[in-house]
Amino acid sequence: MNTLSQLPSVDRLLSSPAIVALIELHGRAMVTRLVREILDNTREAVKVGAALPDDAMLIEKVGAGGTALATPGLRPVFNLTGTVLHTNLGRAQLPEEAIAALVTAARSPCALEYHLATGGRGDRDDIVNDLLRELTGAEAATVVNNNAAAVFLLLNTLAQKKEVIVSRGELIEIGGAFRVPDIMKRAGVKLVEVGTTNRTHLKDFAEAITPRTAMLMKVHASNYAIEGFTHAVLEAELAALAHEHNLSFVVDLGSGTLTDLARWGLPHEPTPQETLGVGAAGADLVTFSGDKLLGGPQAGLIVGRKDLIARIKKNPLKRALRVGKLTMAALEAVLRLYRDPDRLAERLTALQQLTRPEDDIHAAAVRLAPTFQAALAKLPVTVEIVALKSQIGSGSLPVDRLPSAGFAIRPQGRKSGVLNRIEAALRALPWPVIGRIEDGALLLDLRCLAVGEEEEFRAALVAFITS
Ligand SMILES: *Cc1c(COP(=O)(O)O)cnc(C)c1O
Image 1 (cartoon, rainbow, N blue to C red):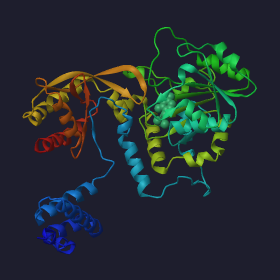
Image 2: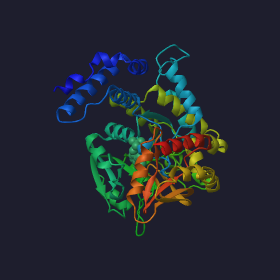
Image 3: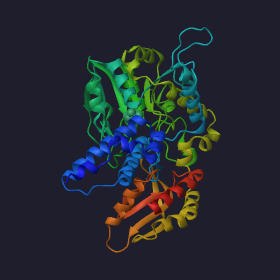
């Protein structure tokens, strides 16, 4: 008997009321493609013995397929990992001022490269040049896609076919893809390593200088700390040595912030202003990220000597690495917030998260505990409010932890598989909840859950109960 002939035709399915509703939602082309695909798959399955589905089952499959295709790939998540500047979750959350600025720039034509005073062509870097000069004391500034691009462009412009001397202890890898030696090679620069992993002295640099040397470079050891018997050369000494030999001295700060974080009880991170210039450490150029401690959009900033910045801007690769108007709009808005350091911790979202008091986070845990416990009530786990340590993230300040609070979910008895199942189910929610598994517990750190998002989080947990 030919069971296959009992399968509905594409047309019959497309004219059923439920599918007509799906066409309203997703468009005819997509739904037709889904119907074909599902009928083809069903035919193959039935040929090898699967039961023949009825129309309702097929329609349900089309609905599920439509929902999956209509779900954006870039989805918002709840970052309960405890890492504030989480690279895989998009790093800094922008402040409202920056969000408003980028929405405006998205909606309207804007004077991105247009000189309103003269009607002539402008330079997009001018949008933030004065602000960066004001905030860092640098003579000039330029902006590219990210800090890796900043380092690459700087090296390629100022040291191509020449040698750059770096301490062995600073040949770092950040987040898998950024390795200083690889960037140097691609920039056409010969890397000269000096010193040892834990100790490098000024004379190591001095002895390595040759007529082919273009630059001395210091890379901030962002994501790790070497402790114990260590020695690094002071930036001021490196600057003096470089300048004695007519070389430039550049510093890749990685995570740049423009204020002293110690003011808020956070560990001090070196700033561009103290790394540049006379009386400070004396670097000629400094590079740093826009979306790490700065709290802005993804960008790479290069600040320092005007003549060197001018050369960097003339490199044809600058065009390939430049930022778009959305980034510029958000970056300008974030930099403006730094003009008023007294209100920065209230206005700059990343700093607000980093300085959020432990008591405040604990209070959020107490508020959410009943919903959370109800969500997990039927599972063989215990849930408790615990003290946690958050991390700043993005390679900044690796040894410093911020006292925080949240939930610890532990399996009852030896059913450790249940944690992985809960972790995966939370990740699969329409608004996914991302935690971390550590020492046999699933930990959800509430530092980055804003008070205003608690209702949405509750709704996510209700979805969890019904899933
Ligand atoms: C993070 C970091 C980079 C890479 O910056 P991106 O903005 O991620 O491209 C380069 N150097 C250092 C020292 C860093 O910390």
